[in-house]
Amino acid sequence: MIAKNYFIVISILSIFLLFNGCESKDKDMTNVKEYEGQSIELIVPKLAGKTIRGPFLTEVKEFENKTGAIVNIVTPSWSQTIQKTQESFEDENINYDIFVSISSWSGKLLSNNHIEELPQWVKDKLDWEDVLPIYKKNVLSWNNKIYGIPYDGDCINLYYRKDIFENKSYQERFKKEFGYELAVPKTWKEYEEVAKFFNAWDWDGDGEIEYGIAGSRLKGYGTMLQFFTRAAAYAKHPNNKGFYFNPENMKPNINNPAFIKALDEYISIMRYTPKEILNFSPGSVRDSFISGEVAMAIDWANIGTMSINSDISVVKDKVGYAVLPGNENVYNYETNRWEEFYNNVSSISGNWTMFVNKESKNKKLAFEFASYMGSKSMTSKLTTLGWTGVNPSRYSHFDNYKDLVNMGFKEQDAKEYLATIKESLNNKNVMVDIRIPGATRYYNIISKYIDLAIKKEYTTKEALNRASIEWDILTDKLGREKQIAFYKASINN
Image (tube, rainbow, N blue to C red):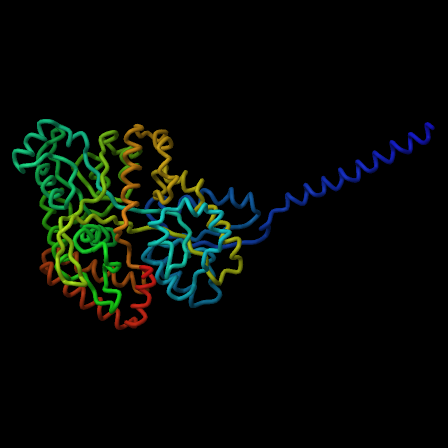
């Protein structure tokens, strides 16, 4: 009996050890990392500070530890990134798996079938329904198919000195001079009148002269985008998908009456800016506003966070936020007529997006890393850190006011900041970047002539006529029929 019981105990123990051993083996197998030994390469330009590229460098180790993968991050300069991207399409020995691209570069990637369309499993990982429609329709798509993975969602808004606008004495003086209440400008005409009122006197009582506005006027990318932001109120008809060109024939719109009016005003308002305005880039605009030099500024979301965390800021808790001014009429390029209604346009210039190379040898891993960096949780964190340059692109990002409060915002200010961005991004009439092959060359042409008009070397009409002629020449050189097809694809027409 004892022997029999002993045999039973030994049998049970053996079975237990057998299954326990299998379980341990299974546990060991789950610790094998899916991408062990695999590697990918990502290219992202080196911008000022750690903007855009910084998060990739700081977050990559955690991804590598989780997956066993190796992610090589290449960070050339702006111009070198364009060159290296082009070289990768011409040399089979150069193969970037992920391109981190500003909107205006995406046409080169998308028009030549270089990019892999997003599979459904990637959309699922990205919580696709959380991504704002304005980006799905205008930045992440091409010919109504999704190729881009969201990272940075840019939009341009108006910032103003709330404390100064609320000054009762100034309100009385303004109404006496202009005949209406001092308030956040709803039109570009009002914007100029408020700028005039606050120009060249000490309205904050610090013993120094202040000015009406700061604006980017230094030749280059930022100035050009901010000019188009203003021009959109006059030239972006809500019923016309085209803006820069007529999509039916690629004839430029940039020298029509709406763009000429916008450039006239873009130059005229320089009377109400700091004297160094010709040297102002977008970065200078931010510094000017947060250092208390001006009453208003137009900028991406950067001023909001910089007003809180910059060492030079004297405007913490003094900033108001508003959508861009509009105009009381808008030019319809299809009918060549002005139409009388209030036209307000949102500008989403400058977005940064991730694209996976169709020729990647590790596409699944590339999508995994891009999805990791573009995820709901990751971008929610990055949008509340001022140094990243990453701005809201999802519905959930508007719930992040507590993170902004932790950064230093007052709760009401954080809510107003996010509410303004949300209002901009809910606008169906939107201005986007040029996203076709040759975009950089089109931009360089218009940038050159905007600068010459600002310096009074040409009238605004002469400058824009010359730019239009050169755009036409470039279009013919690149192939008009191809460019028509690409432009329609870029605006999902």
